[in-house]
Length: 271
Image 1 (cartoon, helix red, strand yellow):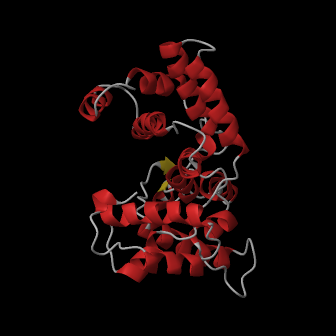
Image 2 (cartoon, helix red, strand yellow):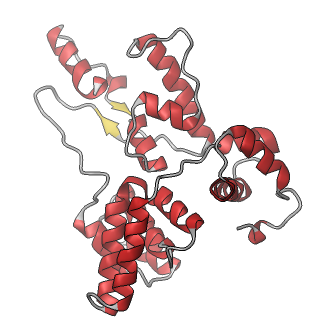
């Protein structure tokens, strides 16, 4: 908001050109929302979710303090594997830009996910390479496909239900609509499969969202692992154990990490 609206207005007020280096920037909040599938992306929320300590003597909305805290947030996101593309630019004063809803993508994105639901990864890549969808829309298609394949088969597995709800996050409505359309097309409206699906959706919506207590940086510090498949799988495994064992603190997660054989066991055998 500051770079896209307030700075251009201030430059206009002082009758000075907008500095060229401010024409392009990265919207960290947008990156956070897309990467962590979070419905909230305030500085306070980002800090809390990433385990960033707020400055002891800091005050909210103080420019210097906010910059320092945001730097810590960006560092934590980078350690989690986030990229920060320069994909936004400042808008002209007097104009407005209204972004598309990030929770309910465009119809053609949903249509693409449904059409590719039975395609192989190679076919998906080939098809997406020939479309006019931009990078974010292609990412949404792939995410939609993952959501279709990951939908829990029953309402009995707490782990599967919690994992799915955490994965889709604020796009729950979009993912459920995709799944409903696919099931009704294959099995029919009010079929046994459709009714079972509706039952699972009710369970999902009633569940409390379970956030991971630890992030990639925390795991790297305690295991010495670097970014890669093993780190990602261990993070997922710990999160599932957090749900299964009812862990509520990082001390609980320390105990869980000590209890599992992550060093010598084969990654492919992990839950």
